Length: 377
Ligand SMILES: Nc1ncnc2c1ncn2[C@@H]1O[C@H](COP(=O)(O)OP(=O)(O)O)[C@@H](O)[C@H]1O
Ligand SMILES: N[C@@H](CCC(=O)OP(=O)(O)O)C(=O)O
Image 1 (tube, rainbow, N blue to C red):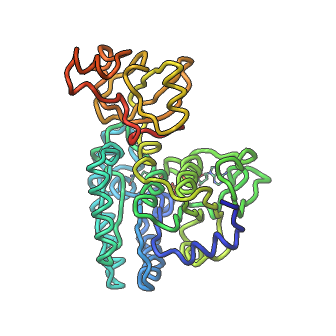
Image 2 (cartoon, protein in one colour):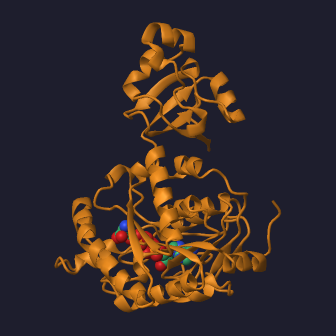
Image 3 (cartoon, rainbow, N blue to C red):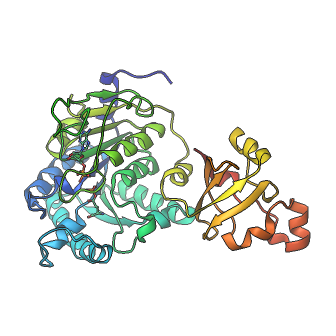
């Protein structure tokens, strides 16, 4: 795929039929950290424009914790996970009520979807999310997605919504991803640093970012900062989706292809959405170390990991959990979904399929990680 020009990428964003827009907490809040209804109304008005012109719009919105801490009597965003989860439970309802009113002014319905990383890497859950989103879009609804903060387990939550939005863009086969934050663009260094300047165009987000310094959130309410936004742009790019990153006030111009913010070109044709989830959605729970022969087969692509080539399972995981597949030196070769619980694997190591069947039973005569559930890293 040849690298498109900046103008071409911006034109493709303007022409997108399905668009995923992610807005961060920092763009929906006042300096105190509390939700700012005027900012939320302005965003809804910009998205309504696109929707009313026939665009299919998915909004990934943070802000549940920001909306909840004021009403609960806290001065600032709570720091501990349990209070954050409780605050999100209060704030999510308030946030949706605001969105319902804001979009209602344009006669547009919204629908809430709360997602945990854990349930979306499972094939059935993943398909359910996809089917529901497709149907909502067919019905002309603007789905509003957030991480299910109140239920997400600490070890495997996204925390920020940047990466989640890129995965959703892939899931709904979006033609553009718009990341709205509290800075107008990606800068060569955190914007507070003297001398940093705006990056207009990133033709290849995978290898062209060596000279850019990014840091975490600069606000009281945001979480991931530029690090997770670049990761989101990378996930979108390898899914064949262009990204524009800018401030919420620029939402309208960004979606119309105007030269605002930073635009990232897609770097690959669209890949399988589910494999992308396996690759990016969740932190692996453990690892399976493989011998040189298995490492070679896996590196070659399209091979399942068989017990015969596995040397050791590390960590505590269940069948269906994401795991690393490592070579003997500990280098990560791939990510995959384990076919067995970690405690079942030791008795299977080094055994071929016939031995597994004879000694352990037919239910063990299967790959440790099936190739459909495996993504090279
Ligand atoms: N190179 C960079 N260019 C632009 N912003 C950066 C850079 N590095 C770090 N940042 C910080 O990232 C912040 C946006 O991330 P964050 O606060 O998590 O926002 P959000 O709530 O929208 O996710 C900016 O306010 C800025 O301080
Ligand atoms: N799901 C959380 C998002 C946390 C957060 O701050 O995310 P972001 O602003 O996207 O970095 C919420 O709704 O509060």
